[in-house]
Length: 152
Image (cartoon, rainbow, N blue to C red):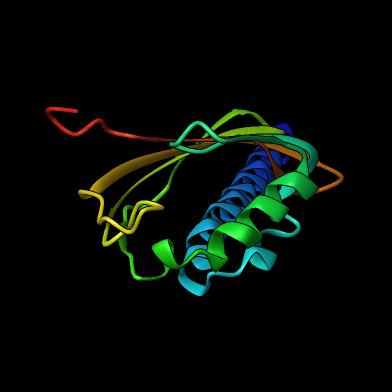
């Protein structure tokens, strides 16, 4: 009987872990969807109220409102509209049942600098730290970085 209870508890824990991984993956995939649609509203529920965010150009923002305001403006810039991105699959690691880290690499061509010159291919790495609060996974921190091209 005890073995049956342990087996049932183990199966339930496995289902919970699979559900959490699916939920974290969905949040990470919203980043790709937002960039595909040039629509920051896709990210509206993904960040915590006090989230930290930094992009590959050193721009930092604190809090969901500031991040979404920045991203809304970013998506309106003509220098990002013509770019094309190839996305790797996200990798997810649970540090605790309520804390996950996700990594995703992607490559972008056609991104232009603010002066209109085309940038070389960007090899970008994004790292998300997510927390589960009230049953919902949200981004507590996101850091985006690029490889430095040879000679730069």
